Image (cartoon, rainbow, N blue to C red; front, top):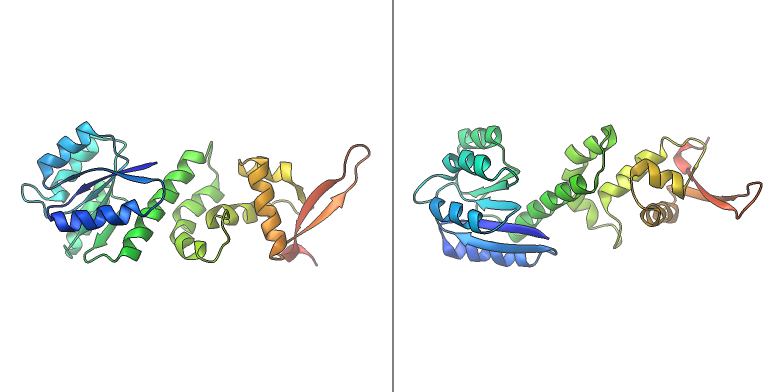
Length: 228
């Protein structure tokens, strides 16, 4: 569950943001604050993963509040949502460390896309036991294409995982079993099987039954693009 706090001096905008958030699965709003002081109190009393922070708060700017937030709430991530258009503010925000920067007015689509991208990155980090270059590339590059790709994929198929498993398959020039792919990508056999069969269904892979000396035949997968 993603726990989100809202810091916005306009209660109408805060209410709109809350409505947007409640439409996103596995997301809850832990509270709303209307100035910097209330924001600090809200975060001390409620555990939050993400803060949606306006820059123009009545008692302190969101930019000036950021260092205090980062110091006291080390696990808190921040997305700035503001009408401010000065380049210098964006530069300061990036140096301090924010997850995203949205300029008002923000449509429901853009808002939802930003939250889903953040959730995807957080889920990737939480599910990874260790990282490699493939993971890093997906995290910093593939994540930006995830929302558009998701709209074209069937339920249960995540674009980032799909890209990862495709890159993993490139390492197996002589084909790979479900178990081999599962171990290489750090996922369960069930997950590996689902993605492999999907790639077979769209003709990115082919599957063959291979018979060993003993035991049941093993299903192995081959990249079609690698064939001569």
